[in-house]
Structures are given as C-alpha cells and as structure tokens.
Amino acid sequence: MSANSSNCSSPFDEQTYRIIAAVRAGSGLLAFMFSLFALFVVVLFKKYQTFWQRLILYSNVSTTLYGLSVVLLRVDYIESNAETMRFCVFAGFFHQYSNWTVLMSILCYHLSLCVKVILAKDLSGRLEAPYFIVIFLAHLAFNWIPFLHFTYGLAGAWCWIRDTNGDCSHSLFGFILRYTIWYVPLYSVVLTVLVGYVASWVVATRRRKSWEGRYNADVDDRKRDLQRDMSVLLGVPLVLILINIPTFVNAIHDAIDPERPLLAFWILHAFFSPLPFGVLPLLFTLDKETRQKLRARNVGRALRTLCSSSPVYNYDVKVALDSSYQSLN
Figure (cartoon, rainbow, N blue to C red):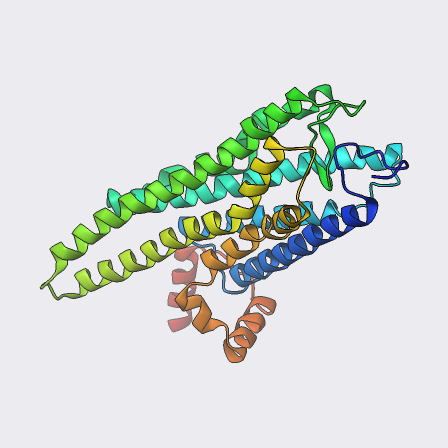
C-alpha cells in the first residue's frame, strides 16, 4: 500500500486493492441479481402459500440482502476520511448480518428436509415462527460483539472484522472473532448439511427398496416427493463445498502467512465467495414445475393476473342466501 492509504491490513498496492474489491463487488452484483430474479419468480407465481415456499422466500430475502451488502462494500476506502470509515463500519456489520441470515436460512431449510425424509414427519406447522427468529434475529445476540474495540472496519480489500489495530499491529481479538463467529460456524454448517445428506440418502435408499414391486398412486407420489427432496438435499452441500473451497484455502493461507498473501487466492476468494448465495436461491426456487412455467405465454398470463387482480371481499353467507331467496320470489 502507498503512504496515502489507511488500510494497513492489506499489503497490496492500490491498483491491486481496487481490482480485488471490484471483482468481489461484481460477483456480489451477480448474486444480488440472481436473488432478485428468484424473488420475482416467487411473487409472480405466488409461491408463498405453504410453509416450504415461505421458507424459500426467507432464503431469497436473505441472499438479496447479502448481495446488496457485497455491492455496498465496493466503496473506495483508499482515500479515506471519517465519513467513509463510519460507513465502512456499518457495511462490515451489515455484511456479517446478511452472511448469517443466509447461513441460517440454508440450515433451517436443509434440516427440515432431513427430518421430512428421515423421520417421515412434517413439523412445518410448529417451526415457522422459530425459524423466522433464527434466520433474521437470533444471531444479532453475538454479531454486535465486533463493535467492541472498534473491530468492524476496513479489513483488507473490503469492510468486515478487522484483524489489525489502529496502529497496524495484529489484533488477536479480531482474529479470534473471525473464526468464532464466522469461519467455524460456516464450515460446521457445511459439515452438518453434508452429514444430513448422507443420513437422508441411506434412509431414502432403504425406503425405495421397500416400495419395489408396489404399484399404486400413493407410492408413486411418495417416490416423486422423495426424489425431489433428495435432489435439493444433494444440491445444497455440493454448491456450498465446491464454491467455498477457494475461500477456505485463502483463509488458511492468510492465517499461516499473513505477511505474504497470494493474489490468485484473493481473486478466487473475491469472485467465488458471493456466488453460492446467488446460486442457491435459483436452486431452491427453480424446481421442475416452475421451470416449465417460465415461458413467454405463462409469464405474460401471470403478469396480467398479478397486475389486474381484483380484491377479494368477504360476504356474510346468511345475507347472501337471504338475498338469493328473495330474488327467486
């Protein structure tokens, strides 16, 4: 960094700094647009009638907030001033908050599917309110902690939890916070999702064998439901694991040798870390039935219905029957 840069936590020069920040912001913009498209599809086809659909809606809202938070991080902090640094503190907190909303929405949805597949029980009627609290509110109980010692702020190429102090010395408090309230929970959720899929796959395989030779409508419906649930369960860990590999590699390298970062790792980290949160809403929302509806004729009909929908009125049944009886006489 040059002398006019206040970002002592990044050893890159200004041009490299701007490239990394721009790559991450561009990837975040893609995630934001994908999430907005998923939200549009949910509203267009009114896919919010059931618990499962609303859980996907919560996930889409979370990923939209995340994409917005990444775009907000694309502020030029090199020529810093007090106002810019205050905004950086807010952006770092908002980014951490949106990270957790996405992580919890994925966990809630995945665990619900695992319970449905493994225990053959649907507990959705009792879980929606707790899920909403877990996804959007519960993690605020610890995401405020980095405000202590002014740990939210400029952290390398973007705003997050700083691992340096104001005098550019290493901050053990910030380093511990990064791992305790993000990296460890992140990979714990990835591991939980993977274990849940393996357990669900074992149960699903046994259940399919028990249905062999039985041909009736009920069994066929169960097979289709099981196949759909398993496809979603498989998609979540694959997306999370494959796309988070660059993030994990860069985090490990940065922890081992923070004085000599590799630009290639940072570029891959910047590009791939926002992408899962753009891919997952498409994975959740664009099921086979919805994909079949995404044709010009169906979309046009849905838009006309959405824009010209008439209000629904409640009628007193007794009054309506009396009026009908009087008209017949």
